[in-house]
Image 1: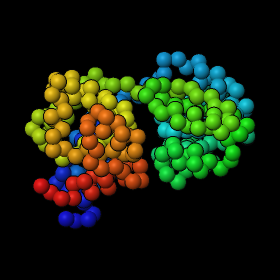
Image 2: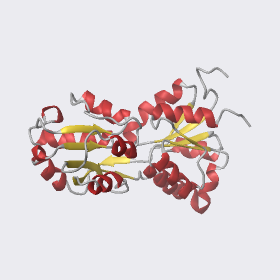
Image 3: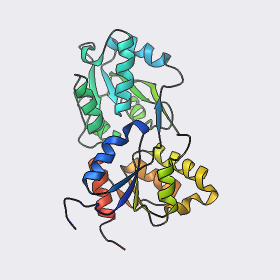
Image 4: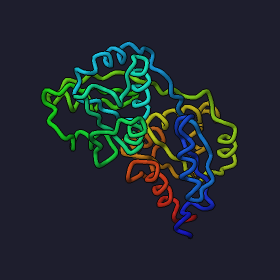
Length: 267
């Protein structure tokens, strides 16, 4: 096997948001894989903008904004622009923390580089390595409306911080599977399926049930289940009964490498 193309001859289904499949497709194709797009998230606004807008109107009263996703960065930037501001011109005392390379890159692209990025791309690492004591800090935590972890808010509150946790966006399930994904599953043409969040696991299960009925799990027989990180792996175990590989580091490059490891031995 050519080490430059560890996924040559393999077909991988990539489950991500509808608007975020391009970067993942490119990386998998560079590794030699054929890619089946399986959109599992539709990113949209929260039910109410009020809590986020109110927090941003008082941004000078916060010490840190903690971003756990690029979606949160985009939502905050868009709402700040509506108020005649932006992250690059935020009040001088407000620092930014970002979980993950993509989140940090999005801040950089907006001219507002993160003041702190933890060494591991998971929320727990942010807590463990946070550069200041949480005591007395006022923290703004923009997050997905439903289904996200509350570990950041709980941990910093326990450390004496005042945490304002607000919905910045919501991720919903698409209406159905695209025809290319259905055909690949029907003809048993997939070698692996990748998941980038717990919600992609939940929504994929829902989409499979909608297309294949009560025995939907059988469509994944012989398909390696690859997760981007520990929380997603736990959801794979809960909903799919197994996980065959986990990215390390917990990003797209790590996901490609995990696929390569899981598929290294051909049947």
